[in-house]
Amino acid sequence: MPLYVMLSRPNAEGLHHLRTNPDRLDEVRREIEAVDAKIVHRYALPGNLSFLTVVEAPNNVGAFRLAVERQSSGRVHTDIFPAIDLDLFTRLLGQTTETVGPFRWQTSLWARSSVVCCATTR
Image (tube, rainbow, N blue to C red; front, side, top):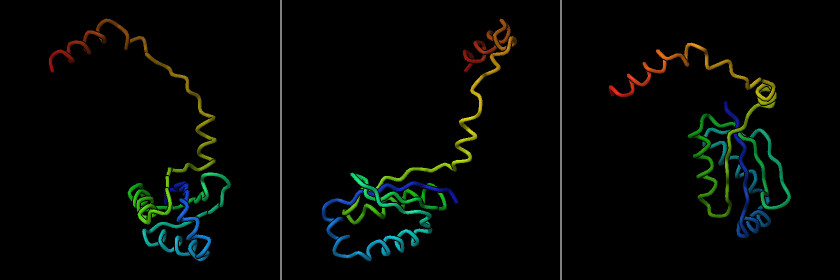
């Protein structure tokens, strides 16, 4: 399943609710699992973004639904982003961005005129 990064920032009411109900994190896990997603990693962060959660969701719609469900309480602002595998990211960074074109035939007179001819007939 695809991975998503969920950044959650509780507001003052959400922080108060978390302090008075420490089991709320288990409830959040159950809510996430209810939309067919699974928590892979969860980290508490200092500063504005209080929690970073790596989630496996079945697809983009499932991930969006997860973010909407999380924000529906009004106690937390949630942003969700697609994640990329580190090995794939490293491999993509190592690829060259050189191009081999345009080829000589693509810039020839007959090729340029056929593009103009086709564009004007539509």
